[in-house]
Length: 158
Image 1 (spheres, one colour):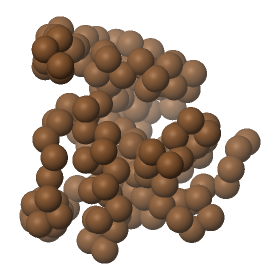
Image 2 (image 1 turned 30 degrees about the horizontal axis):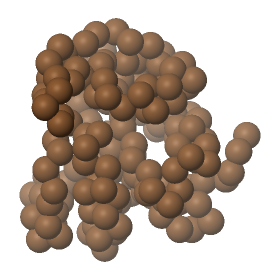
Image 3 (image 1 turned 45 degrees about the horizontal axis):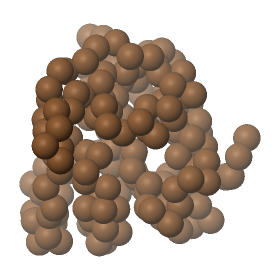
């Protein structure tokens, strides 16, 4: 089954770790701006976003973000970012495999959706291995390094 991971709600004291990961991987995020800790704290206090830390033996290795709840469709959007020290070890796959059943028990959802940028082929492969399938594409969503980048919508039934 893989490593035993735990999950806890992101709190304000976790923001320095969160920001380190978020700013490092921003070229793969839909919003690729870098943020300061002060900006991050303001965002967190005003928006109260739903993020969950991913912990390995009590140490944070990344986070999940939950958004776009649609009660009528019983769906949510989910995404994750992993600290660079922990990438390439199968931990993102293990985190999804362990978090999705918890999410299904906690929420009345039947569909999990996500969006991944077309230049992030590593994440696309991970999502395919997890059973996500492409259901749409936002052509020319953005430009990165002067090249057009699509936003690929993927989903998985729970």
